Image: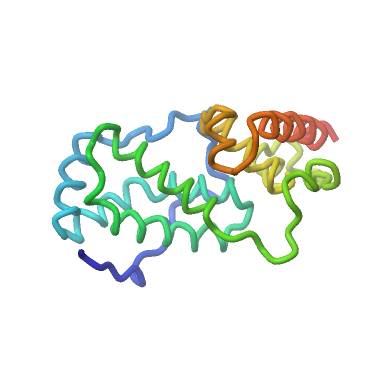
Length: 200
């Protein structure tokens, strides 16, 4: 198995502070699938330059996903590192049944969701009842990314997975260890809180 030192890799410097949601721009737009195929095969054989090209090509999208899921830029940057370390380790298992970007996206979601919750964090169920959304600053009232970041963590995860990334409630339930009904309840709360935050 090849190993990879990622100390030279940083989250893409060109990543916008407010990455554009997928419902505003097609996911993976501008990514050449043929380029991915060649680079994935080369990287799986140990070619670090091919792997770096994959990183440069997909890093912004992974960073945007991590940032939306966590609402924490520093943590998102750390998670990008973790995602690409995991990808390097698992490239040999990629069979090409789906596009590399789709497979990478799944790896990224699993890495984010697999990170332990901070000590003292409330359960999704407690959050559903108790936690209000943080107010969006006056100058950013129409800033959807800021409003999403202000959601309670459980509601934010469900909203991003369902409304931004296109997962079904059943898939979300499996990923988060909750029922599909719990996912629907979190999504309903997220939408209500977003509406409140964006109309203040």
